[in-house]
Amino acid sequence: MAYSIGEFAAMIGVPASTLRYYEKEGLITPRRDANLVREYEDGDIGWTRFILHLKGAGMSVEELKAYTQWREEGDGTIPQRLGLLEKRRGLVEAEIRKLQQSLDLLDRKIEFYHEKPNNPELVFAYPHP
Image (cartoon, rainbow, N blue to C red; front, side, top):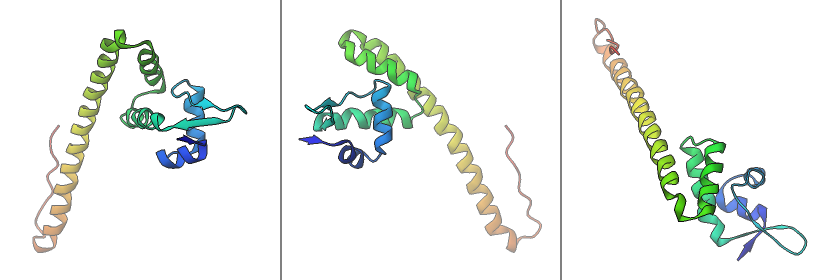
């Protein structure tokens, strides 16, 4: 089935301007009809969502361009794609650890404030790095 840019944008959950930008950067390549109007297909959904996930994981547009180029070049570039994904995975894991530390500190502070009214002498101890 063919979708207009507005329909496809609504399905994916991004503004049409994002799709135009991704097209300009070479990340997606929608078909064009006889009047040169963009047409997206069901097959474009998975790739576009994958790009959005990579972007959400902090991948830069330059990294996305490289990945897209390698994908177009075929299976001979699997090692490059794998390397890029593994590098990004490591960075995401590090970010998750930092966020978990922040969450743990917030939980401790919240617990402190719940206990403080019943124990006025209580002092919050900040963790050491």
